[in-house]
Figure 1 (cartoon, helix red, strand yellow):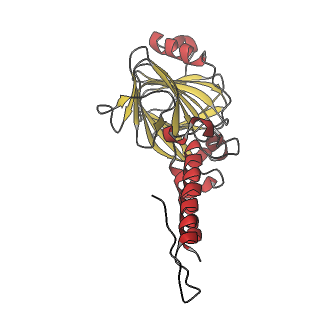
Figure 2 (cartoon, rainbow, N blue to C red):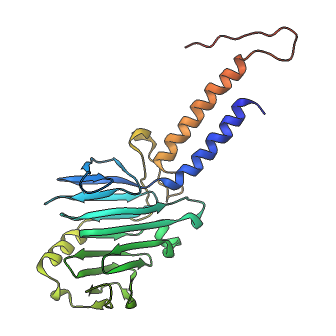
Figure 3 (tube, rainbow, N blue to C red):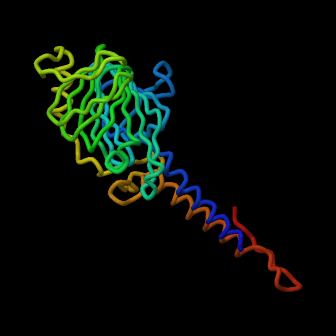
Length: 273
């Protein structure tokens, strides 16, 4: 097997392996939004910037951010929020590797599920200090003011903690006081004023249909955006694919110019630098 073919096969393996480690693209930024390994070391982010698993995203006063994951999942962060992508893996043709685990540490967020949440609901979890939230093709909001409050816009969610699990359908508003108390429904009018304002603001924002997919990397090029959940590959994968083709072409060229081993007299090619 020629060196170029071996190299191409190896790079193609890297291409499909790395696609599982992609995460989210910053789709919109308003005000002071930062991201990093920790909240204290987070630095300013801009639109179209990549946010990888393990990152903490922080929004300041009067600031908001929209993150779109490679499967089409959308997270909208309200002001004064702190959010961590604890685990994320999405491979379009391998649902067994799906994983979406995020933590809302402070503030409020809205979640609109994508392909991963639709096909692998058990792999999806939004964690707050009081409970873990699971979904069934859902658009919901949650806010932390100790206790936690939530509102289900569509689909349904499950709130699970040491006290048990409770399901809530679309149109439901509720609260969970602690990790040892069951979540319960409440009237929307019973929401604290700050939570009601957050929910009103977030629900008024139009989020494009989940599943559109817009994953990417800053270095892949603006023209390479292909939706993962729409049947394509992520932007980051497109960039890697371009690199595969480019490196393979170089290696192939080197193979063509290499000394011949079929005759008694070899010819050495010249490679331009």
